[in-house]
Length: 169
Image (tube, rainbow, N blue to C red; front, side, top):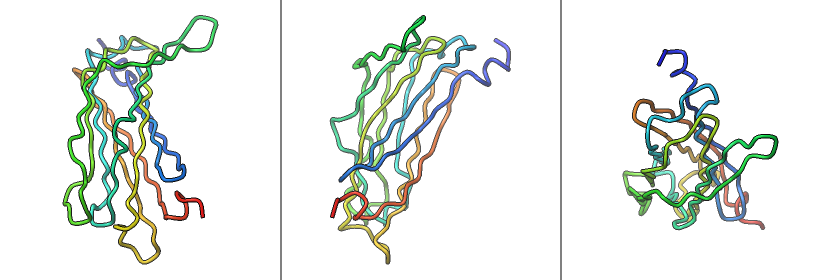
C-alpha cells in the first residue's frame, strides 16, 4: 500500500449541539472512497478534556447509538444501526475534586469498507451545581480518537456553556 493512500484513508469529524439539559455529540469515522477500507476492527475512545475542577460533566449512559452509513448506487446512503461492539465507561467523574474527567471506549466496531462511515451519537450532562466560575460558564472540551490496526485519528470539540443555555428559563 503506498503512503499517499494511507494518508487520506480515514478521518474523524466531531459535532456538538446544545439541547435543553444536554450536550449532544456526533462523532463520524470515515473510510475514504480511495482507500482499502479500515485495517480491521475499529476502537473509538472519547473523553472530556476540561479541567475536572471546573465542573462535573458525565455521559448520559445507555443512550449511545452507532449507525453504519454506506453509499448506495443512485440513491441516498443506507444507515444501519450497529450493535456488535463493546462499550465501557472507563471513568465517571464523581465530583469537582475528582482528578479525572469522564471517558468511554467502544471496541470491536466491524471494519469499514471504502466510502463507509460510522456515526456515533451520544449525550452528556453538566452538573451546574459543581461549576466553579465567576460567570457561571464552563468550557467543555471533548476529544474523540478512532484507531484500527495501523492508524489513529482524532478530533476535538469545545463549547462554552452556561446553565441558561441548557435549561430554558
